[in-house]
Length: 103
Image 1 (cartoon, rainbow, N blue to C red):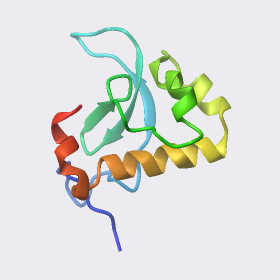
Image 2 (image 1 turned 60 degrees about the vertical axis):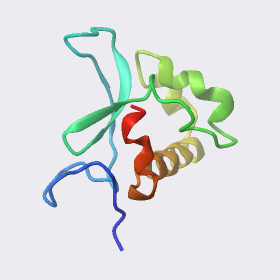
Image 3 (image 1 turned 180 degrees about the horizontal axis):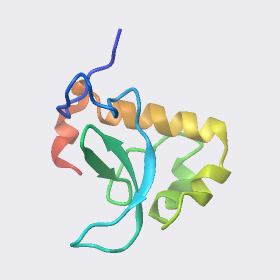
Image 4 (image 1 turned 120 degrees about the horizontal axis):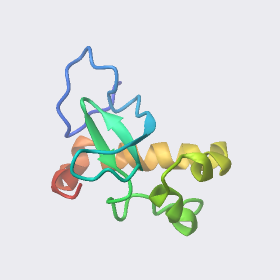
């Protein structure tokens, strides 16, 4: 059974809730490089999200998402990556659609 997100995207989308790639991005309004995750044709700015990473591995390491590269996050290893993916999927799930206006 596929997961459902409150973010709208087409069935042909490369970045559904099951495939949330990390990357470093900037915008015209804020040229500071920062970490984000793609969903649909949007990017969730992980520097601006609060309360997403509350698990035992990431909560004490939350500053990794405030860096300008993915290096510190990648250095945490697979258990932390898994916790991050599960946290993001929960945050973006249709069941948590109140998060739509949080960032």
